[in-house]
Length: 277
Ligand SMILES: Nc1ncnc2c1ncn2[C@@H]1O[C@H](COP(=O)(O)OP(=O)(O)OP(=O)(O)O)[C@@H](O)[C@H]1O
Image 1 (cartoon, rainbow, N blue to C red):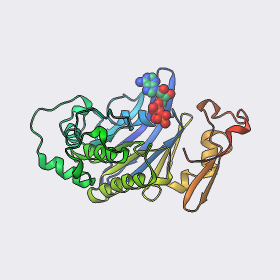
Image 2: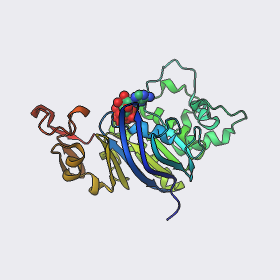
Image 3: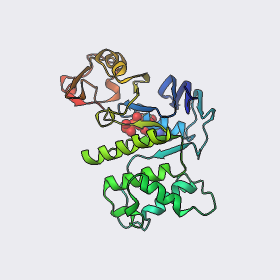
């Protein structure tokens, strides 16, 4: 097997006294699709920030292509959590992609001309070439997301970090986005780290799952992690996982982080059938 793109060894992250996770050891290899799941506040985005070199670990090591994480790494493409874009913004889709190439989006502008050919290439890769001259703010949510993927791919990264890229997209757009991400990893052996509250849209593509909860984690294939025993252990309350019609449904996830590890501390109302967070 080829060398890992991402290596975490006994990694821990805390903000002051707030410990997010610790003892985290996981490798991600070229072409691998890792889904990162967990409740609100479990530290999924913080993990991505650590990989981006924006947040130092409090313990352990984190290597990208064998070297310590650093800001603005060309090995990494990053799709941020969706934010509303002002419809009046003058930025066109091609300007957004150009920012991905010259590094402005992380505040590390590198001078020099960006070849138009490359911008066209990545817009074509995500089937968004027709939007090149359209102001980004007037595109639909799904179209904007395709442009964000193009931006993340512009520097031809070895690893793509996706922070809940399916939020507020309809089912058809979710399918388009997940299949574009999957095409990229198959075509270029790009590793994918995909933070999501919803496993079902990515279920066909996922190789392994990293599940964060209550300061702890489990990593393994879908069946190893997303089962009643493992999630009940992680959360410290009874969780039921069922497969139905090709989907995974989970009942009993505590509504707040405080409910975790306090069996019996939650009322019945917090137990309902929900799609996996
Ligand atoms: N810079 C910071 N300083 C202090 N606390 C922070 C900082 N960034 C995040 N936190 C806290 O750390 C916790 C984890 O945040 P993070 O955004 O990583 O969680 P998450 O799992 O991505 O959550 P969500 O699913 O809601 O997006 C939260 O309680 C958050 O308030």
